[in-house]
Amino acid sequence: MTSKKMLGSQVKRLLSGVSDHGRQHLLEVETDLVQTAFLLGEAVEKLGASFFALHAAVSAQQQEVDILLADFDATNPKIERLKLLQEEIAQHTNGAVTGLQFQDLTSQLLARTVQRIIGLRNVLSELEVEGSVLPNEGEEDEIVDMLNQINKNLNVQSSELKDLLRKAVHQKDMDCGDIEVF
Image (cartoon, rainbow, N blue to C red; front, side, top):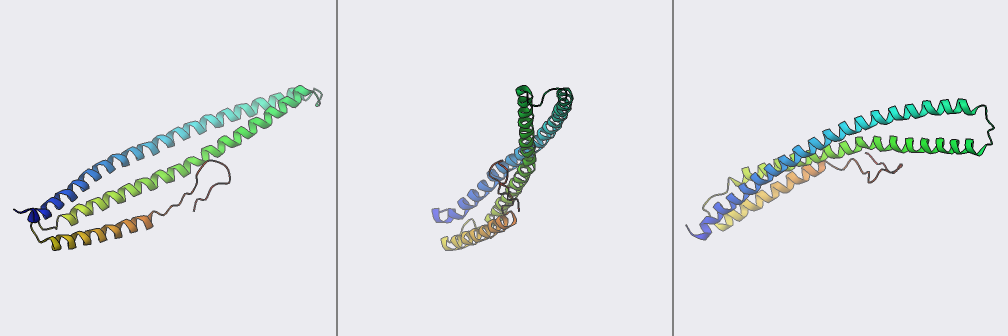
């Protein structure tokens, strides 16, 4: 076989290898992301339950403190300090609640990333299927034409995947007022 006649065989082997290795790695990434999403959900659920229990206990304690302080002079600097601490606790509580709410956005991002991986894996599978139709021995022009067609098909699939998974979450950080979900 001449090197020109081996071109189709070599390209076929290359496309098959890229497809196989890519799919294997993407499957592992997908598995890791799904596990990460699960662990994140579990952690946030437990953190949320613990946080709200802590908040309830602090609120109950504050009610008891308010009852005790009712008999004292409201202008006492110690009472003012307690009121400032109460406001600070309320601010931290609000910040924690906001932080917990972003778990939903993170879950959306992880789910969309998994969808992208599945789509890319499908594109790679198509690459192998389309690459298998290349002739092992053929004219360079014929092989180039088929590679051009494969490239066009991959571009179409990639564009369809991109359109399907347009960014739906634009949150960049966890500051309030920065959400642009849809």
